[in-house]
Amino acid sequence: MPVATRFVAATPLLFCFAATSLCAQPPLSQPPPPQPGRIRGTVLSDLTGSPLRRARVTLLPRATGLDSTTVETDDNGAFDIPAVTAGPYGLQATRDGYLANNAPRTSRLRLPRVIRVMPGDDLKDVTFRLQPWAVIDGTVRFFDDRDPAMGVPVYAYRKVYQRGQKSYAAVGRTRTDDRGYYRLPGLPPGAYLIAAVYNKPVDRDRPDESPDPRKFPDRERSYGSVFYPNGDRISDAVPVQVAIGQELRGYDMYLRQTFSVRIRGKLTDDCLGRTAEGAPVEVVQVDDDGATLPVNADIQQLSNGQFAVRGLSAGTYEFRSVVAPGEPAFCPGRSEREAVTVGDQPIDNLELHLTPDRTTVFDIRRDGKPVTENLDIRLEPKSIDASIVPLQQPQDPSRRSRVSASLRANEEYSIFVSAMLSEDDYQAAPYKVAAGGATAINLRSDGARVAGRVLDSDGKPIPGAVITFVPGNMVPQLVREAYTDQYGNYEVAGLAPGDYNAIPWLDAPPCDILNPNARIECARQGRSVNVKANEKSPLDLTLPGS
Image (cartoon, rainbow, N blue to C red; front, side, top):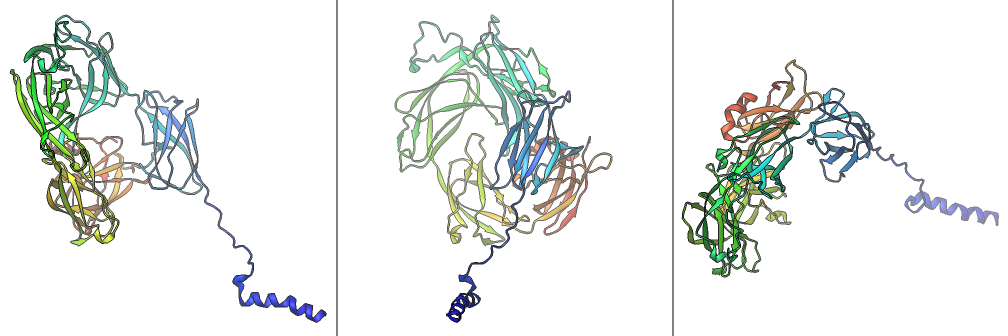
C-alpha cells in the first residue's frame, strides 16, 4: 500500500515535466507601470511681474491617444498639472484681459513649442508671462445731427494673406449701444482698420413706407458705412496702430448721407432647370484688390426665385448663393458667384444661376508610382467663404491612388498634402486644380534637409524658436517650419530642391510671410539658402533684436 501511494503521487510530477503547459507555473514578474509626469509653474503679468490668479493653463496633446487637461492658477498664480501621460504636448495659458501665450519659459530658457514628457518627469518652474490685450473705443454718430447711431456693427480688421490672396480678417467685432458707444477689446498689438457697417436709408422708418420689398424705392438717400476716420471704402481707411495693453479712446466715426439704389433679380437652379425657391442670396462688398467685406444691406426673398436688395451705394459687389448637395436628392451642390458694379441707377432683372458642382478625378503618385497608403489631402478654394474639401480615399489599398471629389464650378482650388509618407517627402506640381476633368497629385521622396542653430545677438542659443522656410517661388505647399530644442538646435526635412528664405522668430513672424508683396521685407529678416535633392545643408541663424 505505501508503494502504491508513492507511485500515484509521483505520476503527476512526471507528467508536468513532459507537458509543462498543463501545470500551474509561478507568475512572471511584470515591469512596473510607467510613472506619470508632472508640470508645475506660475503665470505672471508681463507688465508688472505680479502673479495672475484664475488664469487657465492647458496641456495640449500633440499625438493621438493623449488627453487635454486644463487647470486654474491659485491666488499666487501657481498651477500644477499632475499625472501627465508620457508623450508630446504643447502648453498654453489664457486669462480674461490678456493675450494667450503658448511659449513659456523654465528658468531663463524658452521652452520648445512641443515638449516631450518622459515617464516620471517633474517639469518645475514653468513660467508664463501674459501680455494685456489692447482696446479701441469710440462712438458712431450721424454726421448731420450728431445723434448716436444705435446697434451699428463695428469691426476691427487686419490685412492678412491667405489662400493666395489678400483678405481682411475680422479680429474684433461689436455693436454700438444706446449712446452710439463701441468698445473693441481683446486686440493683439498691430495695425487695424476700423469700420462701422450701416447701409440703411435715411427715411427707412417713416410711417407711410410700404414694407413690401417689391415696392423698394429705385433710388434714395441712405447712410453708408464708414471706415475710420471718414472713408467710404476700406481703401480710404487709415490704420490704427495699437501697442501691447494700450487703450485707445475717442476713435469716433460719423455716418454720412449718400445715395443708394435698389436691385432686383432672379436666381435659377441649373440642375432643376427652373427658378430656385428659397435659396439664400448673400451680398458682399469687393475692394480694389479683390478682398471682400460684409454689407449690412436689406436682402428680401420673393416668390419664383426672385429677390430684392436695398441700400447699396456705388461700388463693386459680389452676389453669392450656395445650395448643399442632396437638395433634392439627385442634384449635387450648386453655387453662384457674380460680380456686379453698382452706380447711381437701379438694376432690374439681374440673372443669377446656381451651377452644379463638377466631379474631379485625382491620380495620386509617389515617385511616379501609385500610392497604396492613406494620406491627409485637402483642397482649399481660393474664395475665403468657400469650404475646404477633404479627399476621401477608399479602404481598399489597391484603389487609394485614384479618388474623386465634387468641386464648385468656376472655383480654383489649391492641393495640400499635410502628412507625408516619409519626413523627406514633399509635394510636387501641380499645386492648383479647377473643377472638372482629371489631375495628378505628385509626391517626391528626394527632399533636402537643413540643420543648424538659432543664436541671439551675443551668440547664445535660443530654445523654442520657430524657423520658417519660405520657397523662392512662394508656393505655400512647400513652406516648412522647424523648432529649436533646449540647446537651440533644429533640423528640417522634406524641402523641395531650390531656393529658400529661412526666417527665425519667437512669438510672431516678423513679416507677412506668405504675402508676395512683402518679399523684400521678409528677405531682410531671414537668410537665403539653396538646397539640393537628397542633401543636408548646414545653416546657423541669428534672431534679429534678441
